[in-house]
Length: 172
Image (cartoon, rainbow, N blue to C red; front, side, top):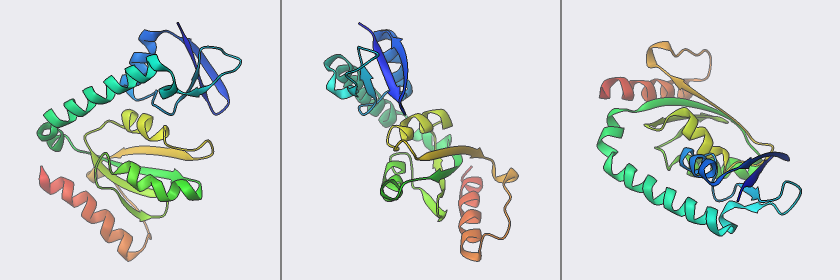
C-alpha cells in the first residue's frame, strides 16, 4: 500500500510504508497530517488510517522513552532559538502551549518567541508545523549568545533577551 500526503492543497507522493515510518520518526507526519491512498480524494487525518495510527502510536512511545532516558544529556546540549510567527488569532493563544513540550518559551515581543531546547531546528519545525493552520507562518533561527544583536526593542524586552542569553552562557 502507498499513501499520498496533502499539505495546503498540494498533494505529495505516493509514499511507501517505509517512507511513512521515516516521516513519522522525523516528525514530518503526525496524527493530523492529511493522507489518502488515492491522489484524487479521500484525504483524512493519518490517525484515522489503522496502519498509520499504529506507526504513529509506536513512534510516540519510542520518542517518550528516548526523552526520559536522555534528559540529563539533553540539558547539557541546550540550543537557543528565536521563533518568528505570524499566526491566526486562535493559534496565537495555543502556540505557547505547543512550545512548552520542548521547554519554557518566552514571548518578549508579539510573534517572537525565545526557546531553549535540545531538539534540533528541523524536528522543532516539523512538530510545530503539524499544529499550525494553513495561513500561519513559522521561522526558526538557532542563535549564539555571542552573535545576537538587537536595537530599540524596549527596556523590558531588552532585559528579557539579555536574561535569556545569559542563562545559557552561565549554565555551561
